[in-house]
Figure 1 (cartoon, rainbow, N blue to C red):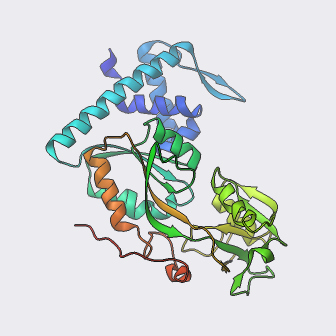
Figure 2 (figure 1 turned 90 degrees about the horizontal axis):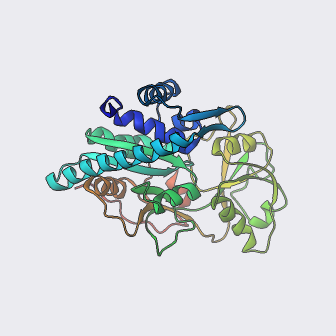
Figure 3 (figure 1 turned 90 degrees about the vertical axis):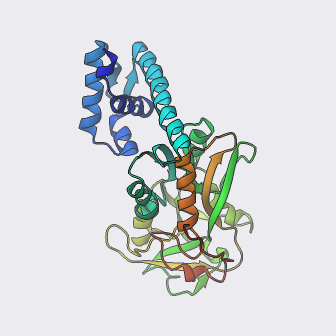
Length: 326
């Protein structure tokens, strides 16, 4: 009987089907790989069908029946989420699911205070967290797979998505202690263009960093790149080049223990804005509205959880008063 398959097992199966990998699904939904494997095995046993074809090079591929089971599971999960949302809206309580997206480059810094703090405060909230790049998050938001996205103001389609900026993050330069520019108070893009660059190569972000040079008719020497900020920071710390970033972790060391030096960029340059993205046609439930209120209270130009040295940029940022929770 279908009631022997839990909603949680369906969630694990759908996450794996969408990721085409148990490992990737594990990282996205923060559940161990053995738990996901057990859930899939249980569903296959209950239904007496094979859900995936396991390919060595290409990962997991749904069988024909697996495709149909996934669609039915998504319908059932959607109906269950609607029941929780309806109850929360009717009672006014903060209870039910929250499908949250967060840009992966800054999610480690804001996770504890904003995301974990919210679920700790409202214990009846079920969080589904997606950490990914801007392109994936905006696409998921437009398909109503996410309720709210914490992201940058990059490539926002204003006809489909509403973006509420909360804090401004100007660009800055990171170099190693051994870099020739390490002792400079500030550097120009002209100076940087003569040195190798390490590019954070994420969709939309990469174009933003390169556009800073294009606006001054300069071409940076991109020598290395990575989609992962910690890898970029390690390359820079090992003096493979400089990088330009907007997030400013409190820790000025790479993961291999080498010190990084942060420098101002002389002149005026377009900052990134961190904020909240929601679909314009979305009817936000009580849970999503409560999370948005928390973000407004905890994110401002004066303070961003997990980030340091806001005064470093005071000359470039017009600040707004920090909001307080009612």
